[in-house]
Image (cartoon, rainbow, N blue to C red; front, side, top):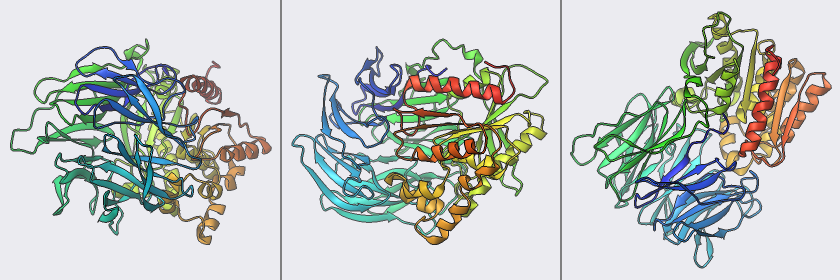
Length: 593
């Protein structure tokens, strides 16, 4: 399953001729190029791989991409010429320099945010890629980054994180180096998750926001007259995109994790009929010039395919993902399950049941997403399908605090309500077991990053419910984790968890961190962590492993020396998958692999 290959991080060239994307077919994340009109893909990068994101220059024949050192997230920038097949490093990595790329001001000038001044605060820099000259144009603070640059290169949209789920929005005049507040509401809101789509004349932009309302809906911000709503409904709206010379506005509605594309004519024409596409999570791309859109899909049986659509006829495949020989019939479609928590909050999750009509409920793994403000969505997940094909059901919960279900739901786990979301796992376990859907005596809880914390917290605070745990690069002690978090997380953490420098919060987490209740853990836990992880230090896992082993509890530990916050390398993914499945088969009382 792990070697199923799809396209990710896709971006169309400004002229609409090519689509660049990231693939791990070689074992590392590499950049590839494919003609929209058809033809073979061409590999553009080699070596140990790229971080993931990249950007086309306005000229359409150069791509700027980032690469770090084995997941340490302190990146160098490289400029690659796709016509001459040459590249050069334009911005070397700097110790302590965590960067957020902003955009191209013109074909040879970029703007970005970086912590290289003091390793904590994000300042704005403008770099000339020809001369190599770099100027700091704004002295910033924690949580700032550039989200978008206007087509004329005069304006930059800056966001400031307010918790993991929200941000303030600013307009930066690049020439005058002046910052204007566009939206800094008293009740925090999100302005950036749906992306920004500037009009070609740079007079305004479309985006999605939940400003003073429950859901992120589509709005337009006119630089002279301000904000107005364009589309409103009881859905989170995403992937806001302008197409066909600003004639059409496209976006997607998030419905229980599925993406439902939408289109609106902005110039009086009739709205085109959208093409039929497979189920999944959609991405939308339109060229600066040209008359087609690229629609990407990531679904439970599609690791990442691309389609070209001309706003009139059916969509045509540009790239079809490979399942690497895995029969599509062996893949399992998730069921959306809703249930009530003990306090009446409606919870949701995705359930994957093994094929067959066995009268015996299956053993199950709860796979908790990270974040905490993320969402379990019906995308292709090799590990989930691997487990289901081994006879283990998988439940992917969206506990309170998850995105996709409105502002209120997203804030129900903030600060001292943190353990309410962990308790949701117990209530979900009880519902599925009492309904006879799963074997309630044979359930493991697994997760990575914040999901790894959830494993530690569930086993420590609610013992007796889960049979075992699988914790990947998760937090065990919030005191140390919040103190040494990377600068990209610190600003959000203060809102999400509280300020650890304040005595009240220090005392709270000294009491309510999993390591403080670790003596309650009495089941086997498989731990793993990347040595290069800059977000959650490996000591968080080492502390839990030592404590459990001291208490006589089995705690196998997998150290990944060449990984950071998650496994990027295919060989590591495949090795780890085999180890986890072998562990789960044993602790869930199945036949030994």
